[in-house]
Length: 339
Ligand code: PLP
Ligand code: COI
Image (cartoon, rainbow, N blue to C red):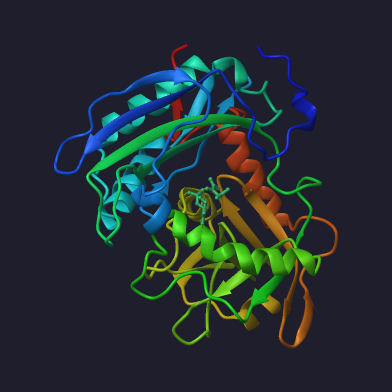
Protein backbone atom coordinates (compact mmCIF):
# COMPACT_ATOMS: atom_id res chain seq x y z
CA UNK A 1 0.00 0.00 0.00
CA UNK A 2 1.34 3.46 -0.94
CA UNK A 3 2.06 6.04 1.78
CA UNK A 4 -0.68 8.56 0.94
CA UNK A 5 -2.81 10.70 3.25
CA UNK A 6 -5.92 8.63 2.45
CA UNK A 7 -8.13 10.72 4.76
CA UNK A 8 -7.58 13.90 2.78
CA UNK A 9 -7.98 12.79 -0.81
CA UNK A 10 -9.74 15.22 -3.12
CA UNK A 11 -10.61 14.78 -6.79
CA UNK A 12 -7.20 15.59 -8.26
CA UNK A 13 -4.61 14.00 -10.50
CA UNK A 14 -1.91 12.15 -8.56
CA UNK A 15 0.95 10.51 -10.31
CA UNK A 16 0.94 6.70 -10.12
CA UNK A 17 3.28 3.96 -11.31
CA UNK A 18 2.12 3.31 -14.84
CA UNK A 19 -0.34 3.97 -17.61
CA UNK A 20 -1.59 1.93 -20.55
CA UNK A 21 -1.04 2.83 -24.20
CA UNK A 22 -2.28 1.28 -27.45
CA UNK A 23 -2.47 2.55 -31.02
CA UNK A 24 -4.77 1.95 -33.96
CA UNK A 25 -5.06 3.15 -37.55
CA UNK A 26 -8.38 3.96 -39.08
CA UNK A 27 -9.90 0.88 -40.73
CA UNK A 28 -7.91 -1.51 -38.48
CA UNK A 29 -8.68 -3.28 -35.19
CA UNK A 30 -7.28 -2.20 -31.83
CA UNK A 31 -4.38 -4.48 -30.90
CA UNK A 32 -3.34 -4.94 -27.29
CA UNK A 33 -0.87 -2.30 -26.11
CA UNK A 34 1.00 -2.28 -22.84
CA UNK A 35 2.01 -0.42 -19.72
CA UNK A 36 4.57 2.37 -19.68
CA UNK A 37 5.79 4.50 -16.76
CA UNK A 38 3.36 7.29 -15.87
CA UNK A 39 4.43 10.55 -17.51
CA UNK A 40 3.95 13.07 -20.27
CA UNK A 41 3.49 12.17 -23.93
CA UNK A 42 4.51 13.77 -27.21
CA UNK A 43 1.94 15.06 -29.64
CA UNK A 44 2.11 17.02 -32.89
CA UNK A 45 0.53 20.50 -32.66
CA UNK A 46 -1.45 19.44 -35.74
CA UNK A 47 -2.95 16.36 -34.00
CA UNK A 48 -6.64 15.78 -34.75
CA UNK A 49 -7.53 15.96 -31.09
CA UNK A 50 -5.85 19.33 -30.50
CA UNK A 51 -7.35 21.03 -33.52
CA UNK A 52 -10.74 19.43 -34.06
CA UNK A 53 -11.51 17.85 -30.70
CA UNK A 54 -11.47 14.25 -31.91
CA UNK A 55 -11.34 12.59 -28.51
CA UNK A 56 -13.54 10.89 -25.95
CA UNK A 57 -13.07 9.27 -22.58
CA UNK A 58 -14.57 7.17 -19.83
CA UNK A 59 -14.57 7.26 -16.04
CA UNK A 60 -14.89 4.37 -13.63
CA UNK A 61 -13.64 3.56 -10.15
CA UNK A 62 -11.99 0.66 -8.33
CA UNK A 63 -12.96 0.11 -4.70
CA UNK A 64 -11.48 -1.95 -1.89
CA UNK A 65 -14.23 -3.94 -0.22
CA UNK A 66 -14.63 -4.80 3.43
CA UNK A 67 -13.03 -8.19 2.62
CA UNK A 68 -10.00 -6.36 1.18
CA UNK A 69 -10.83 -7.34 -2.36
CA UNK A 70 -10.47 -4.85 -5.22
CA UNK A 71 -13.55 -4.53 -7.43
CA UNK A 72 -14.72 -2.51 -10.40
CA UNK A 73 -18.33 -1.41 -10.73
CA UNK A 74 -20.10 -2.38 -14.00
CA UNK A 75 -17.05 -1.73 -16.23
CA UNK A 76 -18.80 -3.47 -19.15
CA UNK A 77 -21.13 -0.46 -19.24
CA UNK A 78 -18.13 1.85 -19.67
CA UNK A 79 -16.90 -0.39 -22.49
CA UNK A 80 -20.30 -0.14 -24.18
CA UNK A 81 -20.45 3.65 -23.82
CA UNK A 82 -16.87 4.00 -25.08
CA UNK A 83 -17.85 2.02 -28.18
CA UNK A 84 -20.79 4.36 -28.72
CA UNK A 85 -18.70 7.52 -28.17
CA UNK A 86 -15.90 6.37 -30.49
CA UNK A 87 -18.39 5.53 -33.23
CA UNK A 88 -19.89 9.01 -33.02
CA UNK A 89 -16.45 10.66 -33.23
CA UNK A 90 -15.15 8.53 -36.14
CA UNK A 91 -12.53 6.94 -33.87
CA UNK A 92 -11.91 3.19 -34.44
CA UNK A 93 -14.42 1.42 -32.21
CA UNK A 94 -12.92 -0.76 -29.50
CA UNK A 95 -14.47 -4.01 -28.39
CA UNK A 96 -15.38 -4.84 -24.81
CA UNK A 97 -12.56 -7.38 -24.30
CA UNK A 98 -9.87 -4.93 -25.44
CA UNK A 99 -11.24 -2.14 -23.23
CA UNK A 100 -11.58 -4.35 -20.13
CA UNK A 101 -8.13 -5.90 -20.58
CA UNK A 102 -6.53 -2.42 -20.70
CA UNK A 103 -8.46 -1.21 -17.64
CA UNK A 104 -7.61 -4.35 -15.65
CA UNK A 105 -3.94 -4.33 -16.58
CA UNK A 106 -3.56 -0.70 -15.52
CA UNK A 107 -5.47 -1.29 -12.31
CA UNK A 108 -3.47 -4.38 -11.33
CA UNK A 109 -0.14 -2.64 -11.88
CA UNK A 110 -1.31 0.29 -9.70
CA UNK A 111 -3.25 -1.74 -7.18
CA UNK A 112 -1.36 -0.28 -4.22
CA UNK A 113 -2.90 3.10 -5.10
CA UNK A 114 -6.43 1.80 -4.42
CA UNK A 115 -7.38 3.48 -1.12
CA UNK A 116 -8.14 1.31 1.91
CA UNK A 117 -11.76 0.23 2.54
CA UNK A 118 -14.00 3.26 3.13
CA UNK A 119 -11.35 5.88 2.24
CA UNK A 120 -12.17 6.70 -1.36
CA UNK A 121 -11.44 4.92 -4.61
CA UNK A 122 -9.05 4.68 -7.53
CA UNK A 123 -10.48 6.72 -10.38
CA UNK A 124 -9.75 5.12 -13.75
CA UNK A 125 -9.69 7.28 -16.86
CA UNK A 126 -9.60 5.54 -20.24
CA UNK A 127 -9.13 8.14 -22.99
CA UNK A 128 -8.78 7.92 -26.75
CA UNK A 129 -7.87 10.56 -29.32
CA UNK A 130 -6.83 11.32 -32.86
CA UNK A 131 -3.03 11.49 -32.81
CA UNK A 132 -1.99 12.07 -36.39
CA UNK A 133 -2.29 15.37 -38.16
CA UNK A 134 -4.99 17.11 -40.13
CA UNK A 135 -5.24 20.63 -41.45
CA UNK A 136 -8.51 20.14 -43.26
CA UNK A 137 -11.40 19.04 -41.08
CA UNK A 138 -11.56 15.22 -41.26
CA UNK A 139 -11.07 12.13 -39.09
CA UNK A 140 -7.30 11.52 -38.84
CA UNK A 141 -5.47 8.26 -39.68
CA UNK A 142 -3.96 7.27 -36.30
CA UNK A 143 -5.41 7.02 -32.80
CA UNK A 144 -3.99 6.58 -29.29
CA UNK A 145 -5.82 4.95 -26.40
CA UNK A 146 -4.51 5.38 -22.87
CA UNK A 147 -5.63 4.51 -19.37
CA UNK A 148 -4.38 6.38 -16.34
CA UNK A 149 -5.51 6.22 -12.72
CA UNK A 150 -5.58 8.47 -9.68
CA UNK A 151 -6.65 7.83 -6.08
CA UNK A 152 -9.60 10.11 -5.29
CA UNK A 153 -11.90 11.21 -2.51
CA UNK A 154 -15.03 13.38 -2.80
CA UNK A 155 -15.59 15.35 -6.03
CA UNK A 156 -16.77 18.47 -4.25
CA UNK A 157 -14.60 20.19 -1.68
CA UNK A 158 -16.05 19.82 1.79
CA UNK A 159 -17.50 16.34 1.08
CA UNK A 160 -21.17 15.58 0.54
CA UNK A 161 -22.90 18.86 1.33
CA UNK A 162 -26.12 19.77 -0.54
CA UNK A 163 -25.10 21.58 -3.73
CA UNK A 164 -25.94 25.18 -4.53
CA UNK A 165 -26.86 25.10 -8.21
CA UNK A 166 -27.58 27.81 -10.72
CA UNK A 167 -29.55 27.41 -13.93
CA UNK A 168 -27.59 28.20 -17.08
CA UNK A 169 -29.77 30.64 -18.99
CA UNK A 170 -27.04 31.92 -21.29
CA UNK A 171 -25.38 28.68 -22.39
CA UNK A 172 -26.35 25.19 -23.49
CA UNK A 173 -24.25 22.07 -22.91
CA UNK A 174 -25.31 20.06 -25.92
CA UNK A 175 -27.34 20.56 -29.08
CA UNK A 176 -30.21 18.31 -30.17
CA UNK A 177 -28.71 15.66 -32.49
CA UNK A 178 -25.24 16.81 -31.38
CA UNK A 179 -22.73 14.87 -29.25
CA UNK A 180 -24.31 15.30 -25.81
CA UNK A 181 -24.90 11.57 -25.39
CA UNK A 182 -21.25 10.74 -26.17
CA UNK A 183 -18.51 11.23 -23.61
CA UNK A 184 -16.80 13.56 -26.04
CA UNK A 185 -14.14 15.96 -24.78
CA UNK A 186 -15.85 18.87 -26.57
CA UNK A 187 -18.89 18.59 -24.30
CA UNK A 188 -16.69 19.39 -21.35
CA UNK A 189 -15.01 22.37 -23.01
CA UNK A 190 -18.50 23.77 -23.71
CA UNK A 191 -19.29 23.55 -20.00
CA UNK A 192 -16.18 25.32 -18.70
CA UNK A 193 -17.25 28.93 -19.20
CA UNK A 194 -20.71 28.55 -17.57
CA UNK A 195 -19.10 26.56 -14.74
CA UNK A 196 -16.46 29.22 -14.14
CA UNK A 197 -19.09 31.97 -14.14
CA UNK A 198 -21.18 29.95 -11.68
CA UNK A 199 -18.21 29.35 -9.35
CA UNK A 200 -17.38 33.07 -9.43
CA UNK A 201 -20.91 33.66 -8.15
CA UNK A 202 -20.37 31.11 -5.37
CA UNK A 203 -22.37 28.23 -6.88
CA UNK A 204 -21.09 24.66 -6.95
CA UNK A 205 -22.41 23.60 -10.34
CA UNK A 206 -24.69 24.45 -13.25
CA UNK A 207 -28.02 23.00 -14.39
CA UNK A 208 -28.26 22.87 -18.17
CA UNK A 209 -31.61 23.15 -19.94
CA UNK A 210 -32.55 21.49 -23.23
CA UNK A 211 -31.30 23.57 -26.14
CA UNK A 212 -34.43 23.30 -28.28
CA UNK A 213 -36.81 25.35 -26.14
CA UNK A 214 -35.30 25.50 -22.62
CA UNK A 215 -38.46 23.98 -21.17
CA UNK A 216 -36.76 20.98 -19.55
CA UNK A 217 -33.73 20.28 -17.40
CA UNK A 218 -31.02 18.00 -18.77
CA UNK A 219 -27.94 17.54 -16.59
CA UNK A 220 -25.97 19.07 -13.75
CA UNK A 221 -22.42 19.77 -14.95
CA UNK A 222 -21.01 16.26 -15.22
CA UNK A 223 -23.82 14.34 -13.53
CA UNK A 224 -27.40 13.20 -14.14
CA UNK A 225 -30.36 14.71 -12.28
CA UNK A 226 -33.14 13.09 -10.24
CA UNK A 227 -36.18 14.56 -8.51
CA UNK A 228 -38.40 12.97 -5.86
CA UNK A 229 -42.03 14.06 -5.45
CA UNK A 230 -44.12 11.94 -3.10
CA UNK A 231 -43.38 8.34 -4.03
CA UNK A 232 -42.31 9.08 -7.58
CA UNK A 233 -38.85 9.71 -8.89
CA UNK A 234 -38.32 11.43 -12.21
CA UNK A 235 -35.15 11.76 -14.24
CA UNK A 236 -34.73 13.42 -17.65
CA UNK A 237 -35.20 10.88 -20.43
CA UNK A 238 -32.25 10.02 -22.64
CA UNK A 239 -33.14 11.87 -25.81
CA UNK A 240 -29.71 12.25 -27.41
CA UNK A 241 -28.26 15.24 -25.61
CA UNK A 242 -27.90 13.61 -22.17
CA UNK A 243 -25.08 11.26 -21.20
CA UNK A 244 -26.46 7.79 -20.32
CA UNK A 245 -24.92 7.60 -16.85
CA UNK A 246 -24.02 4.24 -15.37
CA UNK A 247 -24.82 5.57 -11.91
CA UNK A 248 -28.13 6.86 -13.31
CA UNK A 249 -28.97 3.38 -14.57
CA UNK A 250 -27.94 1.80 -11.25
CA UNK A 251 -29.95 4.29 -9.17
CA UNK A 252 -33.04 3.68 -11.33
CA UNK A 253 -32.73 -0.07 -10.61
CA UNK A 254 -32.15 0.46 -6.88
CA UNK A 255 -35.08 2.88 -6.58
CA UNK A 256 -37.43 0.56 -8.50
CA UNK A 257 -36.37 -2.93 -7.50
CA UNK A 258 -34.80 -2.50 -4.07
CA UNK A 259 -36.85 0.38 -2.65
CA UNK A 260 -40.05 -0.14 -4.66
CA UNK A 261 -40.58 3.41 -5.93
CA UNK A 262 -42.02 4.43 -9.25
CA UNK A 263 -39.31 5.82 -11.54
CA UNK A 264 -40.20 7.81 -14.64
CA UNK A 265 -37.71 8.64 -17.37
CA UNK A 266 -39.46 11.63 -18.85
CA UNK A 267 -39.32 15.38 -19.39
CA UNK A 268 -38.59 17.25 -16.15
CA UNK A 269 -39.26 20.97 -15.69
CA UNK A 270 -37.53 23.48 -13.45
CA UNK A 271 -40.80 23.98 -11.55
CA UNK A 272 -40.80 20.28 -10.71
CA UNK A 273 -37.32 20.69 -9.25
CA UNK A 274 -38.28 23.79 -7.28
CA UNK A 275 -41.34 22.01 -5.79
CA UNK A 276 -39.63 18.67 -5.18
CA UNK A 277 -39.22 16.84 -1.90
CA UNK A 278 -35.64 15.94 -2.84
CA UNK A 279 -33.33 16.62 -5.76
CA UNK A 280 -30.04 14.83 -6.27
CA UNK A 281 -27.48 14.17 -8.94
CA UNK A 282 -25.58 11.01 -9.83
CA UNK A 283 -22.29 10.12 -11.46
CA UNK A 284 -19.14 8.09 -11.00
CA UNK A 285 -17.32 11.14 -9.67
CA UNK A 286 -20.19 12.67 -7.63
CA UNK A 287 -21.74 9.29 -6.57
CA UNK A 288 -25.18 10.43 -5.26
CA UNK A 289 -25.04 14.07 -4.17
CA UNK A 290 -27.97 16.07 -2.77
CA UNK A 291 -29.06 19.41 -4.21
CA UNK A 292 -29.72 22.09 -1.58
CA UNK A 293 -30.78 25.08 -3.64
CA UNK A 294 -31.36 26.12 -7.24
CA UNK A 295 -31.12 29.70 -8.41
CA UNK A 296 -32.98 30.54 -11.61
CA UNK A 297 -34.05 33.78 -13.28
CA UNK A 298 -36.73 34.26 -10.61
CA UNK A 299 -34.36 33.91 -7.67
CA UNK A 300 -33.27 31.22 -5.25
CA UNK A 301 -35.36 28.13 -4.53
CA UNK A 302 -34.42 26.28 -1.40
CA UNK A 303 -34.87 22.52 -1.65
CA UNK A 304 -33.07 21.07 1.34
CA UNK A 305 -31.49 22.35 4.51
CA UNK A 306 -27.93 21.46 5.35
CA UNK A 307 -28.53 17.71 5.36
CA UNK A 308 -29.20 14.99 2.83
CA UNK A 309 -32.82 13.96 2.17
CA UNK A 310 -33.96 10.52 3.31
CA UNK A 311 -34.19 8.92 -0.11
CA UNK A 312 -30.98 10.53 -1.37
CA UNK A 313 -29.24 9.16 1.68
CA UNK A 314 -30.76 5.69 1.26
CA UNK A 315 -29.76 5.48 -2.40
CA UNK A 316 -26.27 6.70 -1.63
CA UNK A 317 -25.92 4.11 1.14
CA UNK A 318 -27.19 1.29 -1.06
CA UNK A 319 -24.93 2.19 -3.96
CA UNK A 320 -21.76 2.76 -1.95
CA UNK A 321 -22.66 -0.27 0.20
CA UNK A 322 -22.68 -2.51 -2.87
CA UNK A 323 -19.45 -0.93 -4.17
CA UNK A 324 -17.68 -1.55 -0.85
CA UNK A 325 -19.09 -5.03 -0.41
CA UNK A 326 -21.21 -4.09 2.66
CA UNK A 327 -24.52 -4.68 0.87
CA UNK A 328 -25.24 -7.84 -1.10
CA UNK A 329 -24.53 -7.41 -4.81
CA UNK A 330 -27.91 -8.73 -5.91
CA UNK A 331 -27.69 -7.34 -9.44
CA UNK A 332 -24.22 -8.77 -10.14
CA UNK A 333 -22.63 -5.33 -10.63
CA UNK A 334 -19.25 -6.01 -9.02
CA UNK A 335 -16.32 -7.11 -11.17
CA UNK A 336 -13.68 -8.63 -8.86
CA UNK A 337 -10.01 -8.17 -9.75
CA UNK A 338 -7.58 -11.03 -9.25
CA UNK A 339 -4.43 -9.47 -7.77
N1 PLP B 1 -23.37 13.33 -17.29
C1 PLP B 1 -22.16 13.78 -17.66
C2 PLP B 1 -22.08 14.93 -18.60
C3 PLP B 1 -21.00 13.16 -17.17
O1 PLP B 1 -19.79 13.59 -17.51
C4 PLP B 1 -21.14 12.06 -16.29
C5 PLP B 1 -19.96 11.39 -15.76
O2 PLP B 1 -19.48 10.44 -16.27
C6 PLP B 1 -22.43 11.62 -15.95
C7 PLP B 1 -23.52 12.29 -16.47
C8 PLP B 1 -22.64 10.43 -15.07
O3 PLP B 1 -22.27 9.25 -15.72
P1 PLP B 1 -21.75 8.00 -14.91
O4 PLP B 1 -22.75 7.73 -13.87
O5 PLP B 1 -21.62 6.93 -15.91
O6 PLP B 1 -20.43 8.39 -14.32
C1 COI C 1 -17.28 10.80 -14.01
O1 COI C 1 -18.18 10.94 -13.20
O2 COI C 1 -16.60 9.78 -14.10
C2 COI C 1 -16.95 11.82 -14.95
O3 COI C 1 -16.40 11.53 -15.96
C3 COI C 1 -17.27 13.18 -14.59
C4 COI C 1 -16.13 14.06 -14.73
C5 COI C 1 -15.22 14.26 -13.64
C6 COI C 1 -15.84 14.58 -16.05
